[in-house]
Image (tube, rainbow, N blue to C red; front, side, top):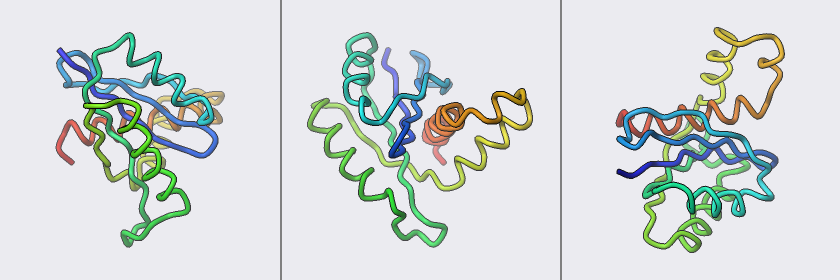
Length: 135
């Protein structure tokens, strides 16, 4: 059985999510500092049978690039070079941060509502679940 990894890249932090072995459910994993992302992913890949990376692709509402879109393209290239044979898929991530905030506000405690890493992790989970659902 294989897993898929969801990534919500940010310049400071990157949210990560992982599927179950049957690739049905996406679950939050963690948020890591973006400057150590590749080191963390190398360790994660050594412990999990990940065959797909679903990378959140940021665009504006009208479909144009945002200030971070080019960074995500470069990350995609770096991931493809580092993890040969792993499929890297770009998944539309518009509105995932807003949806993540709604999830946190609906069920979270006051402290969780201020945790930016949690927003990134939930966003990665939503990106991955959207991919699994064919959205």
